[in-house]
Image (cartoon, rainbow, N blue to C red):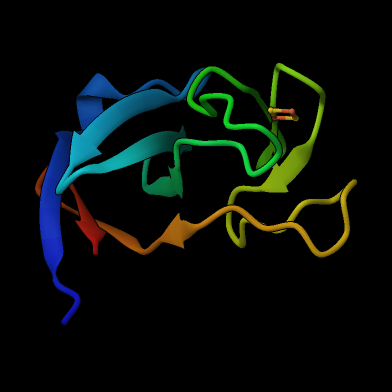
Length: 102
Ligand code: FES
C-alpha cells in the first residue's frame, strides 16, 4: 500500500539543480520548480544507470549528462527516446516539508 513519507525540507532544494536522496532502499532525485512544485524521479537513468540528480533541467525537461537522454519531469517519459520512461513519484508540500508517495 502506498503512503506519503517526508523526504526533505523544501528550503534545502534548489531550482537550478537536483538533489539525491535514499528512502526505503530507493534512490530518488528531487527537482524543485518554482516555489511550490517538486518532482521526484528514480535516480537512475534507464539507459545505463547514470544518476539523474546531476542532470540539466530546463523548462521541466531533465537531460541526463552521460548521453543526453531527455525526460519530462512530470511524466518521466523521454522526449528523444520514444517508449522509454523513468519512474516518477507523486509529491506534496506541507509546511516546508516535501513528502513523497511510495
Ligand atoms: S546513462 Fe543516461 S543517457 Fe546514457
